[in-house]
Image 1 (tube, rainbow, N blue to C red):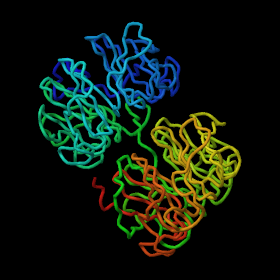
Image 2 (cartoon, helix red, strand yellow; image 1 turned 120 degrees about the vertical axis):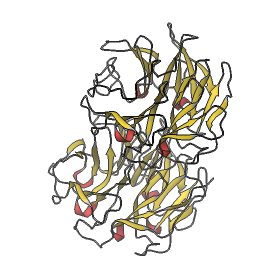
Image 3 (tube, one colour; image 1 turned 180 degrees about the vertical axis):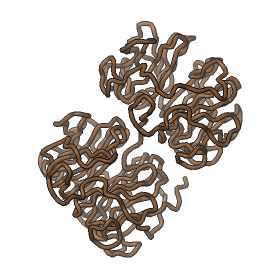
Image 4 (cartoon, rainbow, N blue to C red; image 1 turned 90 degrees about the horizontal axis):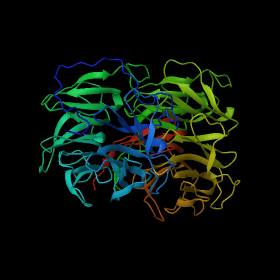
Length: 595
């Protein structure tokens, strides 16, 4: 029967109980046998045995019906590339023909077959593939989503190359393209359904077709019944009804065949952990666009002021020497409003902000902040995480009607922070010239960059400011006093220079006091070049950069910057810059992202 689908017809008006029963995990994040850590793909066998891709535990876990704990059936030997290991597995199915599991071993860029009976290691059946999910049709052909190539490929048994069955025409929003495809389903007619995450739609590709058709969403990201927001898992029943995990809206939707809008069948009651709620954090690199930005992309040179810009002050429409920025999925902006000792939220199109943390004067109370330098949104706990610089602490501040924060890291000279896809926190300690990584609940952390005193050697930093982490857990740091951006591969003892490093100056090979840093999926580095009042782009491996906005002298015109600090992109590739000296945030719309 079609994988992940019931072999029965589900009536179009079928209803489900609104309170879910936990059948696997639910005992918080952890690596115990009764726990899961950021689970992704799911396969339910005929006898209701569940197989879960337990991503951050790098294992596949089997949960029998009614069991209170699971059993590791693949991986579980630490993150790695050995035949007995997995690295961030995202999906799993059962291949009954060979009595084995087939696994998307995502960070190893391979698809693995792992025997179900006493299997202690797997066999790579497809290599060099950025596998997000997979499924199998009734004839045993395997369908694999390759996010890197924005396509779905079909592999007959024994094939290693496969045939494109959907997408394959580069990333985009045309009907023959996909934009970060995630999950795949194949019906009995060999039509392929794909959750097209970056386009907020589900696409159907009939066998042999050159392009697909939109069968759910496609009306832009949003929470209306005609819309989806970052769709993930997808299943189609025998009537052609589509069921989709609408991750950004924390709900499951049903779209009957030919419908122009869907209905919510479970969830949709806000993000949470009650039995009638769902909490599906959206995995994408913080501060980075989830899209590839083409090396030749251009931005409008005149920025639009989207926060502040009304001189310095403490009014709700003002900022005062702002620093860090976080841009949410819906283009809501969070700004570390430094000299007002507060975090301010600005909705898209708003002419004033809303104080969401601090704002009670400078101080060290739980309801106060003192010179906050940076802020991010932790979707898992629905809270802000703040570098409370002068209080030498990192604070977690709930987003929902909370009037105070909780110190999660003490005695740290925090200036910048970010979070990886697994919920690990990376914090820049200016005083110790290092970056530390903290697992949830940890207070000490592990050094991942610097930590060898201030200096200009490759194993040192001097005045580190902002940090970015890519999908391979490589750490990028703006090394202010060395006028360079450094990259530290996970586990490395020293870093290497990826931008600047040729002394302070305004040449294209130089930086002068770099601040905010972002890296896109191609490895291109974007950096706020503070003293040169410009934003620079350095393609991977380049020995010099190019100016993408600013660089027109220090000033307050729309094509000028005055001390750029924080830097971010939205998922469309629009650029956001915190313009410190002008007490504003500027948005530079992308003009062209063509390949």
